[in-house]
Amino acid sequence: MAKWSDGTSAVVVHTERGSKAIKEVGSSLSCFVVAYNDIKRGNPSLEFSANAGENRDEFMSLLASSEADIEELLVRFPYRRSIVQRATSVAGVIRSKINHATGLNSF
Image (tube, rainbow, N blue to C red):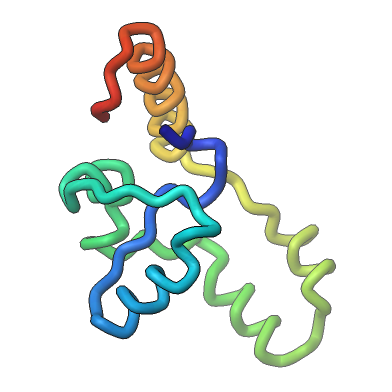
């Protein structure tokens, strides 16, 4: 079973075209089917938009106006994970270790 640190945690296919694309590249990926609710549990933004950062408008305005290049913007507006994101990450690591230790594969 893939670990969370291995990269993309989920790809949700909504159309036949998307399903065909996944089947075409599937042999080069570690793919398995899981229930939507299991994916949703670790990805709340599937159903609810994330809150905009406090400096989003300023960042987007500067990005659109080309007053600063992307490196300058990334220094000026560094990404900081929220406490919820950090707690979710820690919970995932703990859950993974428990699953590994007990032989369980459920989330």
